[in-house]
Image (tube, rainbow, N blue to C red; front, side, top):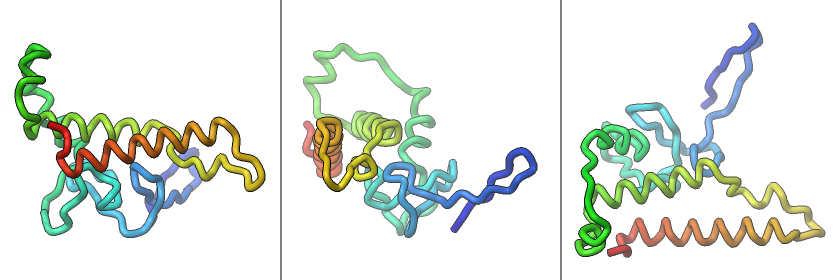
Length: 139
């Protein structure tokens, strides 16, 4: 599947890719905004049988008008509810979308630089946070 984009009267074809991993194939489209994701890249993972489906970006945008202010002590004293879970998933997806999380592109076959190790360490940490969010591990 490819989307067509125009510019300066030249027609450029850009393949559709996952918003998170920037890879193609087997993508699911948000029914609200047309962003594309792999089912497992999105937080929470996409339930393919659920239609219409809105991505976390659209869901947080829709819920942002109902934000309430709470003291930190109140928030920490109660279990994480669906709204807090959504906010955490949104923040992690934003980090993925705006970070250079493809360390393999930077790697040369003979030389592993400190930057590559740092990138791999950060990606591992983000993946661990995502796994814990999926499992609702955070209280």
